[in-house]
Image 1 (cartoon, one colour):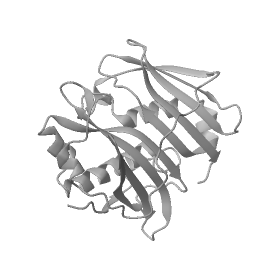
Image 2 (spheres, rainbow, N blue to C red; image 1 turned 60 degrees about the vertical axis):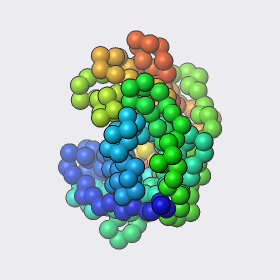
Image 3 (cartoon, one colour; image 1 turned 45 degrees about the horizontal axis):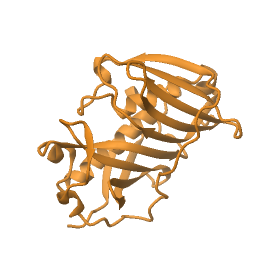
Image 4 (spheres, rainbow, N blue to C red; image 1 turned 90 degrees about the vertical axis):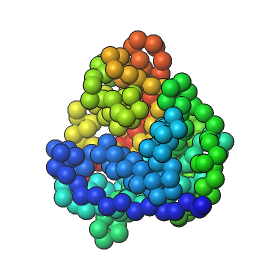
Length: 251
């Protein structure tokens, strides 16, 4: 079987918008993941098919560029396709379009397969590698390489892990991590600027009852760029590392 491009349609709901009536990034990432689920289901390798074998998909990294954020009630289409495979890393791209085919944003992501009992990453099983990767469009550059570490964190918050932070994989959902990364920044940044790019690496699990310490600080060499990390207070493990870039707010 060959991989195919998927198209999933969504309408921005009021509960998924910010104070300016624009879709939040976590909502858009949720749409991307729903589109990925739809696409993998057509090939028999969705999360449900993996769970039947004691396995699951785990998002390891995603790099997103947003050109314009859709507004409440705006209809969008998310196109997605498998864009490559490297050892245990499976790459997937996304493009988000308006109703008139304006490119609103794009992303490239990296996925792993996890054993749900052992909570360990495993080699990509044969029933997944049997699907020939045929990118639906020119692949975006793979998200790889290291991100710079925070030299001088200026902002810090503590986030207790609660019931509604947990997903089907029984750990903190990646969109909640994304929210915590952004919420660490001061209000004046979030009010007066708009996120244009994010590169976020998910390194470890956090589960119910943990407390996550989120820290952030400006990058020294690039204005409007911030570096982030999330750490488990209980284990001391680094859970997430990210880099964000902001531009002047567009409404």
